[in-house]
Image: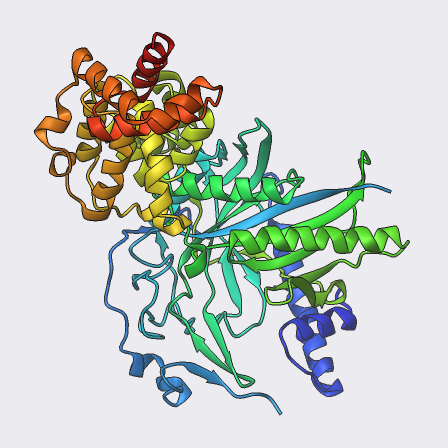
Length: 92
Length: 472
């Protein structure tokens, strides 16, 4: 079972500040999620370790350089940034 | 009451790969901000990380070089925290199963500092604070790191220094990292606690974050030991907290207390599959390792007749050790070479980073030639030392400073002539000596040395002079 305190704590860790209404919604959603995961767990054979949906392992990349993105592209979503940096103004 | 210090270290080391850990951007220091970036390393939604194979190779090499057990099966986990240096709001790291475990580094006293684990992770971006605003550079974001965590086995700041310097030396030998603390490619977090001498129970610990100099690290440990001992002495309680060391005031200040101790909600990263190594992979990497510092120290002591402490001084810097080996080729006494390195070269290049680079003007062969002249009794040590200083200044060879006539071995009769001459022309010193002032002999000796232009052996001349004076 999930408690409201747990939901509040997770929200705090995620830097989310919830109104009491939003907390109620999040609480109900979280209950549903945990219930669903518990259902999945019931289906699982406890002797069998499931690591991944597929049986892949060692998906590696060679250590070879590919040119990075132009900086204008990188800073496009933050209105061009400031002096080449991502920029956070001092909070008031 | 007397207290003893308990220290554990967590050392972050950036790996010498060409590219980042999960994308193909350059792993390099000092570029313009945000020019080594792509959607993967700035954490755009919908991108997928792909693990750089070389990161695993280097992490395993680091583990093998520090006597670790290698976990053939491991995986990457997510460590969740919200902070602007980490655009995804989670760092990809290893939690339950690190790639290496249970190793150790041995100090020169023979004491072993146990390594609990070495795990792989990505570095975070760099925050630049200006007037309360924050500027973020993600070039470092996604640079591959290993974190090397010791057990709380360190019991003095001196041991901490030795451990870190030894770790640096080892990781440079195996070319896992350049370990430049001033550039941040090696950083230490220190866990410090104190306990009454002899007590088995560990005290409450504090953690000092992000030390980027060995000297400041030792100062921070000493300061924190005093601070915690004082608190306990005054019946107070040490508060578990994260501290920052202030270089200017040589003290520590609180960053955060335990109340907001982090809950990282680790879980297995579903974007990355398991890492499975075979014994063969590990053996291959083991075979690729060069001779490690400890083995070299032993070899220099046993085969070359260099003292252990001298060997440690040289082996600490790989370039110095390589120079030593080349310069010692074919010599009867490699010890003379190590004396030149420690006594003269290290006097010219004094800082750690200079010694690491070992940029000097002369080649190993030039030193080898000089020592051959000494071994062949062509010149004495005094002249050799003077010559070597000039060689170091100019990069020229011994032959440029020592003429053919200087190098001819002086004959016994010629030497005797010069000695007799010197006794004649230094009547005051002779009288002083015969009157009991033994030091006066030095003046006559100096005179003879000048006359022979360094060809004679000082000890031989002294004996000759004493004999002549006795019979005069």
